[in-house]
Length: 93
Length: 184
Image (cartoon, rainbow over all chains, first blue to last red; front, side, top):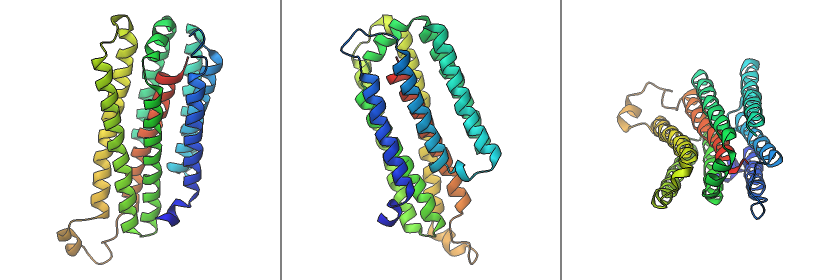
């Protein structure tokens, strides 16, 4: 099993867990101050989530070696999700 | 499977859009509700699902290498992480339900329970699929002996398709965690 754990997938998992802790820290930052809407925190947290999702698509789901239509569909969904989140967030806040 | 997965992604995008829109109408209420969630539990569940995805991805690699015993071990570890995720989530729900949440935060918690329940349904279906993958890697003795020569090896494509569904469960949780637990 250890031979498989030396695969690049483990490095991807390490990046994913590290950025999860980074987003936790970002989400908790400012808790001691007045609680309010924050575009910078939301932008950072959502950007990290999109990056993590792309890593899952690209490496765990092996989209990086998939046909072009699937690569574009996955990236298109990520871009669409980002637009929807930020457009509606900007309208509301 | 990919058409099903892409459909799922866009359906969840519609739910996320409703959530962000409603949140924008009353951000203070949603922020107050968010403060009652345990981000630590959210992080723990994220790490559990990411680890589960790693094990399932390694199971696919071992299957391709015709290393069925190792593939089965990775699959069991991946499924174990899935069960652990459900137990942690059930514990989180139990605590929240016992806390007698303020009625003023009803709208936020409606979304919280809807997102997490929908996701748990997907985790349950994912676990069912992992059981089918296990059966593919470890066929019953009757089938093993009755199979034609050369047919005893697991179908790699079958394992890949099942793993794809499991990874999408992970990807959806990444988005839910960011939007419900962390965003401001």
